[in-house]
Amino acid sequence: GQSLEQPSEVTAVEGAIVQINCTYQTSGFYGLSWYQQHDGGAPTFLSYNALDGLEETGRFSSFLSRSDSYGYLLLQELQMKDSASYFCAVSRSGYSTLTFGKGTMLLVSP
Amino acid sequence: DAGVIQSPRHEVTEMGQEVTLRCKPISGHNSLFWYRQTMMRGLELLIYFNNNVPIDDSGMPEDRFSAKMPNASFSTLKIQPSEPRDSAVYFCASSHTRRNTGELFFGEGSRLTVL
Image (cartoon, rainbow over all chains, first blue to last red; front, side):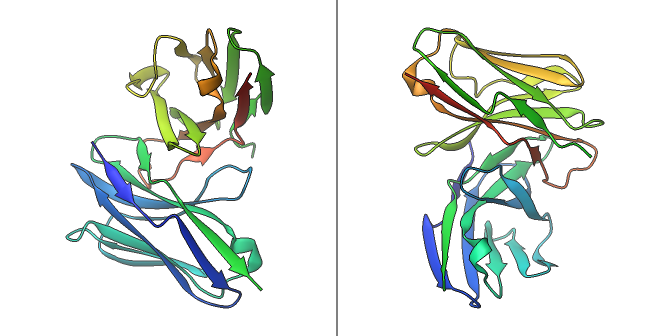
């Protein structure tokens, strides 16, 4: 099976930088995705890493180390609207499905 | 463009009743997924269709759950009979398998409460 570990909660202040880590165990690893979900809303896609390294998309960046089975989501210049749950998810070779972690609740305070 | 459309958005029913949740995927997407989200178990995959064919239903809890995809633009998830432990938010998502970018497009979800 697959398993993913991420912190349950992270707090930060506006303007700060926060990193949300994700470690995974799965056979046939293909890629790591990150999703954001506001309370009562749908998960929305943020980023995807299939290769080692950093992917940058505006204020958000995502990193992957395949050898360490580890990735992280980096959020810069935090805003109040970034308060949400963030999920990492793994995809496997030959499979279109995603297995999600339990999510990290990010609380951004003024 | 319209996203994934789910109905109903909210459903409150009594134990033993039949519940049918509906989903219209994004036009052109050939993969459809049903996920269930609870506080305890997070986001769990229930079933995955590709080109209208069920490929992986290993996440379907038990025989009370069934899902169909009669055509490329419609899918249903049925629970019969429903139980209080089925209370959750049920999400439908779609994607195109050729573009394996780890991106699924989720609907707004159907929040089910079974009393």
